[in-house]
Image 1: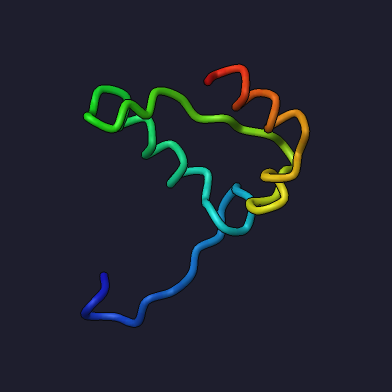
Image 2 (image 1 turned 45 degrees about the vertical axis):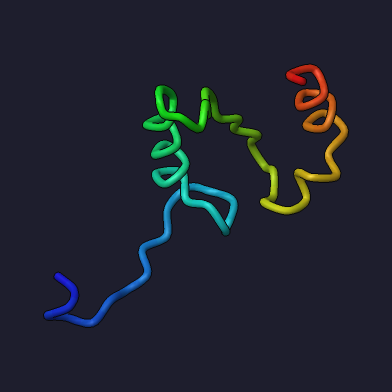
Length: 64
């Protein structure tokens, strides 16, 4: 294990920016002071392209 060996990249499910396992880490914030209470998984979505996705924008607007 690093630092005794060289680090390596292990790809998994995700959008190329955020790995699916890392996204699940957000679930640990549900009861924190940040009030992060849910995650959204959009199959086929790309990390930055989601910001222009009308379905995503409407979802956020409905939560305000």
